[in-house]
Amino acid sequence: NAGVTQTPKFQVLKTGQSMTLQCAQDMNHEYMSWYRQDPGMGLRLIHYSVGAGITDQGEVPNGYNVSRSTTEDFPLRLLSAAPSQTSVYFCASSYRRQGGGSPLHFGNGTRLTVT
Amino acid sequence: EDKVVQSPLSLVVHEGDTVTLNCSYEVTNFRSLLWYKQEKKAPTFLFMLTSSGIEKKSGRLSSILDKKELFSILNITATQTGDSAIYLCGARFRGGTSYGKLTFGQGTILTVHP
Image (cartoon, rainbow over all chains, first blue to last red; front, side):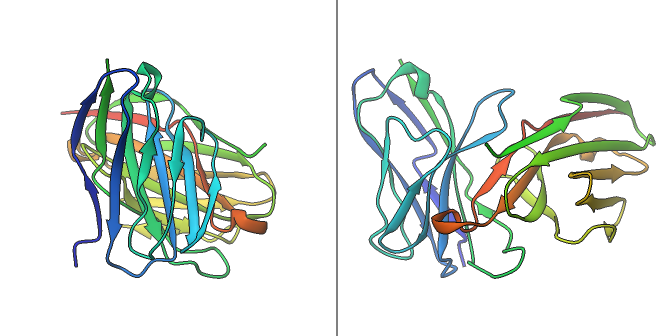
């Protein structure tokens, strides 16, 4: 049981390049999400999904795309990288439960630098 | 707009001290409040709180929620250097396709000196 797996761990891009950050979970979680973490800003939600075929925007969606074709995978695409997207990116997943919900499980993050 | 605010933003203490971290929230259709500890990599789950006034406890850590005043506290007693970390508070709310959406505060950086 690997949990939430993110690849790559580190990435350097030039301004204008595109790339995809991969996220996979093996816990059969319905809910998956992407956050970015910048110093002093906590975790900010980029996009999330409540199940295969369903995605929605979070607080800071501009410049990012997502899709959810399977329950296991939730890739994050940067269409044209900008220096402002330099950050640490976390993927997180959970069961979709009634009441208070269930805790998020986080991947180990991808550190992205855009020059 | 849903908002979570943590205080203080940073805190430096010595081993053995007791600390209280604060988290206030303004979210529509509140479901739960979650606390996480983040050391070098991924945040790890500490507590999930859904009911007012019921303390959750794990070793030296405890947390409580006040749904009337819209805040939660995380207490750490007899701190150790291993408690040094960023502590993150997140509030989950319900509504439409926002099911399960979790909004986090800025985090509190705790440093414990020997």
